[in-house]
Length: 281
Image 1 (tube, rainbow, N blue to C red):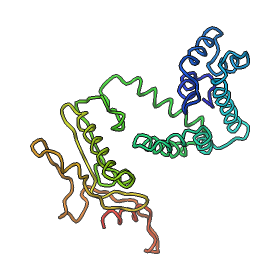
Image 2 (image 1 turned 90 degrees about the vertical axis):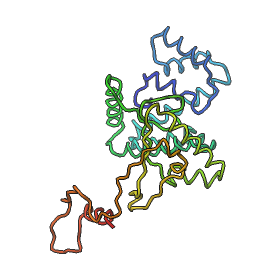
Image 3 (image 1 turned 30 degrees about the vertical axis):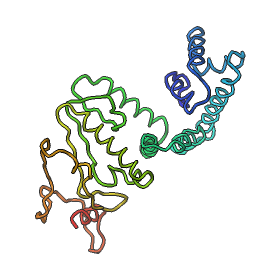
Image 4 (image 1 turned 30 degrees about the horizontal axis):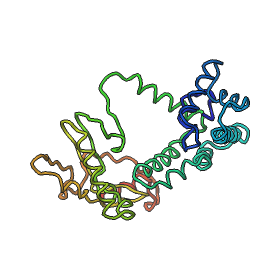
């Protein structure tokens, strides 16, 4: 929206999120004005405010929103603010992060994690334009795909949907059930996670493939993992168990290690060599 002021879809998605007392009736009036005058929803909003065509209570929220948009555009185009820093400011000043933090539930926690992932993804691009071009290209590829495909989503987003085959990775203690949910809500939090597990499994019409890792690389180091307690609660009659872990194996098969570099000092090793040593310990 900041980069492209004529993005009406983006405008409609964020104008009342978080809530700013801008209801459906006001959005409808803005749409009608926009269609009549053949201008964007944002420009329509500004003109309607100038002509006093917006109700007083709604006027306050809409004015505040448009002022924020103007301020963030100035941050980007005049102050030349870094796009990652800009996103952090937007999430804060819009009230979006506060809204998610104040309403503590798993869904909002997932949204906060998604914002962190978005920030990480944006760091890989030089500027906002490059990032948005990448997103646009990825979206257009998804829309043009007509063959078989895989839908990747959270279990919350999968509610009400069904698929022939469902993959459920990461069923490990601390991840699922999530440690934070248990620490904050105790037994109630565990039951919420168990209900979510039921939702995930019952999305599958034919096969549900559940997996977990024996160890996982986390924050620069390998940590041991335990299978989720939920896997032990599944009925044996309907399970087919497969393991790719063999405690008797001393070496990793089919592993081509070529990341080391030659040096006279044998104590100096490449990052790849260090990662490999951690992996085989």
